[in-house]
Amino acid sequence: MPKTTLYSIIIILTFSNISFSQEIKSIHQEQSEYYSTFGFSSEKEWSDFSGVSTTQSKNFQRNSKGELTKEVFGWNPYWMGTAYYDFDYSLLSEVSYFSYEVNSTTGLPDDIHSWETTELVDYCHNNGVKVSLTATLFSGHQTFFENPVAVENFIDSIIKLVQFRNADGINIDFEAVASSQTDNLTNFMITLSQRLHADVPNSRLSIAIPAVDWSGTFDVAAMNQYVDLFLIMGYEYYWSGSNPAGPGSPKNGGDLWGSYCTTRSINDYLASGVLPEKLCLAVPYYGREWSTVSNSIPSNTTSSGSSVTYKTFRNEYSDVNTVWDYNSSTPVNIYNNAGSGWKQCWQNDAKSLGCKYDYINLKKIGGIGIWALGYDGSYPELYDMLAEKFTPSGNNICEDIFSDTGGPFGQYYNNENWIYTLAPKNPVELKMVFTDFDIELNYDILFIYDGLDTLSTFIGAFTGTSGTQDTLISETGAFTFHFKSDVATHTEGWNAHWTCDEFTYIFSDIEIIETSEIHVYPNPFNDNITIDFEINKTGEIDIKIYDILGRNVFYQEIENTNNSININPVNLKSNTIYFLQIRYGNEYFTQMILKQ
Image (cartoon, rainbow, N blue to C red; front, side, top):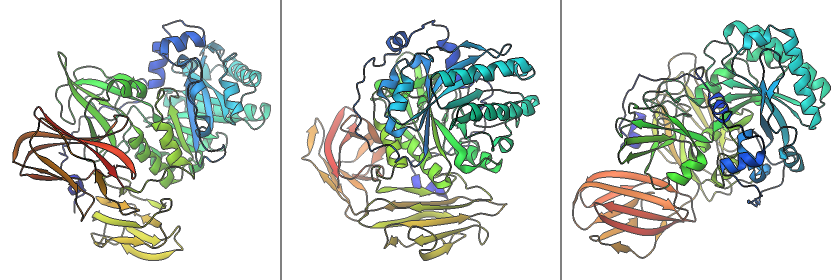
């Protein structure tokens, strides 16, 4: 069964003209160069410029420190001013001040901004969070590495700055390093590690590594013993100059976006020898907007893409239709801007980040990084997702799609061997149905157990296209999966729909505004919502579901109908109020619904 049958409303296109290059200019470098032109010197000036709070405005009520199950590392760029007043420190393990700008000739800093005075250090330490200083070098690597005096100056200088603030470590962000400097980079990291750990007890050394190490510059296996965290910059897969527009941080490539994605980046670095517990995936709290030829996915661009923070995205795109791209597991906002044509803004939201967090838990790697803290503004949902995925007492998810590592439309990988446990909190009943199943017969096998580990009751071993057609029901409230693939041949994999409780939808009284009769009710035999029209409709029908904050959680466009349609908004949370809106021409229908 082809996996595309799961989402029949999606049109699949093959598009091979993919532009990807993290070696051209990363978002770290791009934004560093942009903000360096303003010349502000104080955090207050930057706060005023960036529009962030200069007094603490959030009052987080989280669980006590120590409950994080993963590393949550975040960069704090100097241009965010005092945004750190409003960080939720209960969901952070380390914050790194960005940055000590290295002079490649001397090793001394061209600028350290407000490092010597920022209250960030006190905020972190008062909340049990480590704080480090990031060093950046975007060019002149050979000049720096081949000058022993410059290297020594840098190590002496940055360690003294760390000691001066009683900080906890150093983060190295050296980008676009040529392959000819591989040995020099490795030796530099070893020397820095030895000095830092000797001079600053209990300190940590981390390094940012590219999503794809095209030239093989970063010898992560050789650095393993000396580096405490490796942070994959899991963004810019589609960058400002890309054509077509596309997902900046795709979980998967599917049939549409090529083979490079965050899943592959994690697997490639693990295969290169990084210890899993030291590997983190840095995720973007920003996206990119392009002018495009059309509203199709994909669509060629007519301009360079500009970066858009999550805060700006939420402020300015709340009324723009959101389309969920199942190939990359990311959303895209597509709209026609009067006078300037089509726009596409590819962004990550809580749902798409949660998909990546699930894979981090599945692969049992160290955790995540965030570029950049404060880019979410006052919106809480990205912190909520951290709590949901990386704390034992996170919110309960009771329904989702469970796919192989290739995602809903992509193929899994060769040489996989992983174990993953699905265990929602306090389930009434945990059940799962495979909607697609196709793995290499007798060579690749999915083992399923009823319980928290592979010592639990054995349900079955599935291979080929013999995935169970029956509903699997767990008596323990947990499924454990063990998947193994061999070194050659991989196929479509699987998709499964799971839920942990029985639910229905409760509808408010119908509110009809200038429309013909419409009836909405729950389908008693499945998870669908059924919509009946009194007469046949021709033309576009827009169906949108949004929450009480006005955030779009479901959108579907339908051409024509024969009186009745069904929708299946699988990402709606139980016991939560939503609003269903149907638009046909100038006629609107709105109804409150409660998923229970």
